[in-house]
Length: 157
Image (cartoon, rainbow, N blue to C red; front, side, top):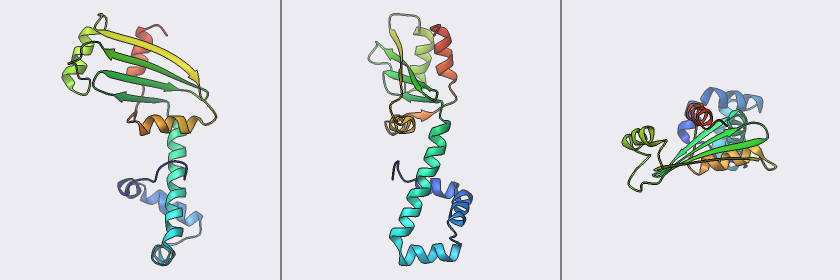
């Protein structure tokens, strides 16, 4: 397995797609129920293969991620070959970007010495999707890139 198995909730949400996947493997509901009982290791492999297929699709389409921590915001932008990042850091230790008040403070303090903003880019290594997945595993979330583009414009990047 290349990525992680989808959660039970994710499988439930993707039930129609999983049914089509099983059908493409020529496995109907009765056979699936039999597999789960008599050959659970084969059923587990099918779950893993489906999970990887879903992850590949999601990661291939990912263009932006955001990761928030108490004093940092990491904004990522991706194309096919390059990963770009904008890092926003509060120099004030009691500011918490995980709280609405911290984000409101950022709006007011963005052009002061209390906020440090850095940016950079690098080419992806051998496996773009694996690198995007690693960032997700560290707590980032998929985004539409609105904040990324606002900062990119503000910094004239």
